[in-house]
Length: 254
Image (cartoon, rainbow, N blue to C red; front, side, top):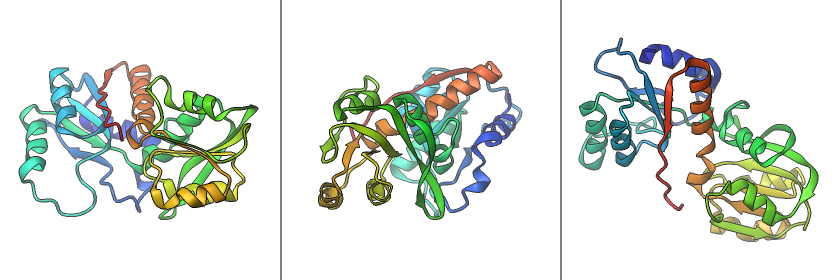
């Protein structure tokens, strides 16, 4: 598939035009030298870091698909380390495709609905507004589980959560999820009487409110909470278009 064909394919389900309030430049951020180049391998990563693009080059990928791209809706001088990143894409003729909020919110392959499915939630509905866009997921377990079991399911063998706050019920049945830096969404989670709130980062300024709301909270780590969507897109692409894919994993511990 060409980059243009891949762009159309990704947008057929990510619908970037529905997320105009996203500060990310969603879609193609860097093209290949030849627009008609046949891309036979696509790499997927959370971040468009220098490590990620170098690994994509080593693996022979023609495109790197990421959640956190290079451009965020404002002018950026291509100097210093930013130049090094851009130069690595161009030198290796690797295109860059980014999907930020569209990948968080997607109800098929998104970070939040994807996490809801992984941990076993049922009757999942959209949850949490940001700049007029609904990002998260809210659902319930058929049978209650402990916070220890919830952490285990959320982390998926990727170590311990960066933060676990057992402030609520011992038996958890309803869970609200917003990946990444969404600590403030505990307010909406509490308003829905959620038994637990799962996010990426937990901010100090939200700690006491979470405690007073009697809300169980798991901070999976910003990075870990956003490995879900890119891997689901990779699986979908491989299954539907028979294109080779690879997930590039560079955990930050944050």
